[in-house]
Image (cartoon, rainbow, N blue to C red):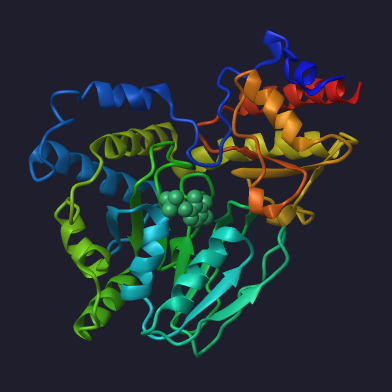
Length: 375
Ligand SMILES: *Cc1c(COP(=O)(O)O)cnc(C)c1O
């Protein structure tokens, strides 16, 4: 059978998910979020971010996240432009006193370790790594003043529920793909940072960091040392602007509106536990399906480390790229594996916005595509 014929395969319409977006970021945006932008077409879009209409949305995002994460008094929601990648540089200037400790178990966790290793004003970081598909065990290290690791390693689908390794170090968690879809205890974390294009189903471009009182203290302490910090990466400037419901420079307004809408959607439906339950439902469906198929295996062998928001499924005997290509031709998109991982794999976003029934439908679609490719 020629490749062309194979890609021409039509998945029966009744098997298709209602929404075919399964990417791990950018990810499915709910129509209500776009409607929220449209409904503010003249009242917010195209208006000053220094005036009440936009500041009220920033304020609503900040208070909405405080209640979503059930944060104790004294925590601050800080935000700025540039996404989580820029936050690594922000943290390198404004959170790490001297030496950071990193758990590296995939592409995203390695990037923060690289950023701090490259910083001339810091000592070489301590890096503990493990094979992809697993995570290292968090351990205390008295020589380090921050512990950095992801809540969810998006490149591999491994989740690590935040714990405090011990000692004085601040716990700084990359929650880019976890925030809003996985449970966590603020007692175990000092900085929980993320971007809006994953569980919050928005658009990229912002970083948001929930900061504990100890983290706020650290930000002030480092600022007082007069260490050079570029203003656009200066966490104390971002903090001062955030408490006034502003950003240092102009934010993308539509991104803020979509984020606010998603936080409200979660809060009005039952909060973080409700949102996390939706992802957990999807994950149960996906992993139990994979375990029941001869051609599929969950990549993360230890089920306790398997992510409820990013599912990675190894495929045997069929080219996973061909499966993804046929799905795409049928309107079911972004099921491709993380390229640098180099595995014959599908990677499936199971963020709260994605209907668990659509994840179930997706498994049915993969079944017929694999049957077609095997025949
Ligand atoms: C997506 C992702 C990032 C990068 O986010 P940007 O907003 O694109 O910079 C960082 N860390 C994790 C865990 C991610 O999933």
